[in-house]
Length: 93
Image 1: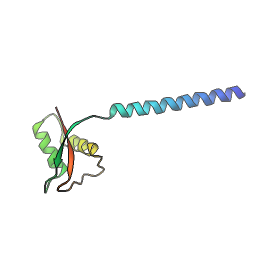
Image 2: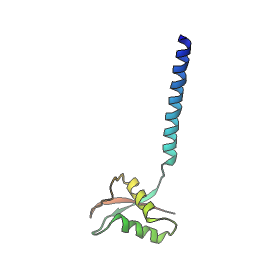
Image 3: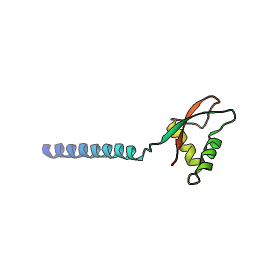
Image 4: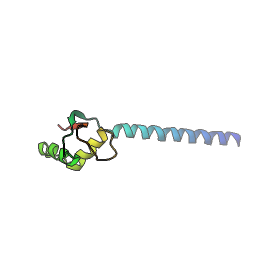
């Protein structure tokens, strides 16, 4: 009985380790690496119009995707930007 409990504990421990390992690996694989360039925000700039300008140069991407990428690259939780602020913009090949 004691050996059975110990074996069950070990199996559960191994399953938890596998789950954690899988989660970390999935996160790392899902994270996209971008080439970026610095951009200084001008008066009246919004993420939407910045993304729109990027999309006008590359028709294969969508504005919402670019906005999401900009926010991810700059660790932004909101879409608010300010004049004079420097943000990194993705380069799409």
